[in-house]
Length: 257
Image (tube, rainbow, N blue to C red; front, side):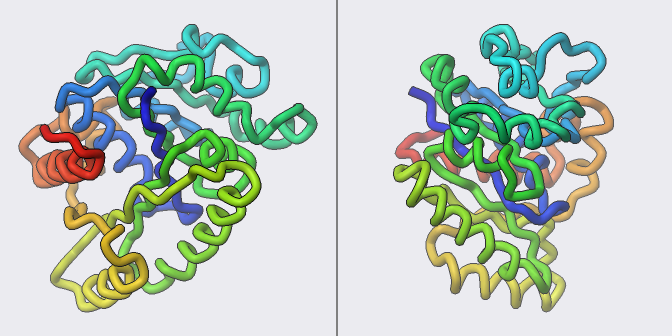
């Protein structure tokens, strides 16, 4: 059964999608079967794999609201065999529609349970909020991976997330555990970066990945070309760092690349 990991932080602009897209790619490049589930209505993770919204007949919206067949919703990509459950702008209104649905917190979990045996890892790109879509992701997941940009209010936002995770663990998903905390957009030349990184490590201890993701223009450019950075420029600093993260991630699972 594939392990399900939510990449989550209710603060936007911290590198959630960049991390989901490129970590999924790096893990697949290492020979694992990977599914990326895009739960953000902006659909940036989907477009980062060259998936065009207007060409979709089914999306995660249909999976959640219309009980679409999950196998028919999955889109195959040419990038190391990563499969994608794509998002659509319709997801923006999905939370309102989900309120009246039975077992609304478990819609994604029930769908993923039908295909998780086909994959080694399923990565979920969560929206920048703690609403029903994120709740569905947390209910479906084994672990959460938290990207943190080392800036002034970083830990303030994460403390709210941790409280939400505690509530989910208590009421909905008792097996939910932390996967790790990832420092993104890291610039070791800045005192603020070093100070916040120190606070993050003090707060989370050995849950913080040794690998840190630097600011890198190739990571920013790749999505506009419809491909992960590891494909767009496989030897860029950002790509090499995500491969290191994949090694560390797999080592934490007891695996080796």
